[in-house]
Amino acid sequence: MPTYSFQQVDVFSSQPMRGNPLAVVIGADDLDDAQMQAFANWTNLSETTFLLKPRAAGADYRVRIFTPIQELPFAGHPTLGSAHVWLSQAASAPEGEIVQECGAGLVRIRRDGRRLAFAAPPLLRSGPVDQSLLDRIAEALGIPATMIEDANWVENGPDWIGVLLPSRADVLALNPDFSRLAGLRVGVCGRFDPSRDGGDAHIEVRAFSNRGTEDPVTGSLNAGLAQWLIGSGIAPESYIAAQGTVLSRAGRVHVDKVGDDIWVGGEVATCISGTLTL
Image (cartoon, rainbow, N blue to C red; front, side, top):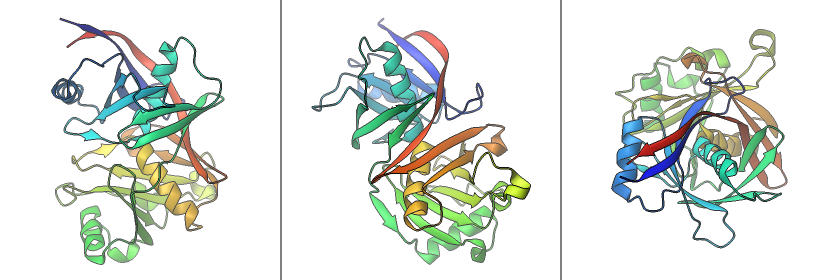
């Protein structure tokens, strides 16, 4: 049976094994859809990716991104983790930006010291959320609907709904009923109070997936939230988001608006390297 090079990496944390893990299969061009989905289901990670030869002009590599139950056109921590693995295998990596081909098109990635960052793709859906849906979300989160300061669709592949609460403390106190959130991807954020929360980040984020789980650190959600929060003046053009706190993770997502681009970045480290048989 054929064997493949494999890495499992940790994304969005400077502390080993306190970010979001990603499984990456290298040179997966001869695997079919069913094999990719079966392996992603077996790893049971939030995402598993497969590195392939590019098809689009200007792309350095192509990636396919799978959750345990479906393929995604784009996701953030798989983008940075896949780029990290591709760079570790590349005979001659480009000096400037790296271009990833994925289901959502071409995504630009840059190296910024120890961090990698991707340019947030355009939102596929934005704008206000229907009040009936907000009422359902508030009930599922166990809060009054009046606690929601603002909300917006922030879909950029995954169909995230962004919800703003008054404070980090409010975000950390949530105890969601996942049965009531079934089928929704909801990202909740709240501002840090420097006097109480410290100054190593500015916004706390939690991501509740449509699989009934909480995601440790989520690039696609943070990209969509950044476009909404910066665009509406809620957040400054550069900030750090903390995520995964209630899961004993130490995720840190660095957001920077440069010109028309919003860059979403973090550190990546390889934790497991070897081969697998499929």
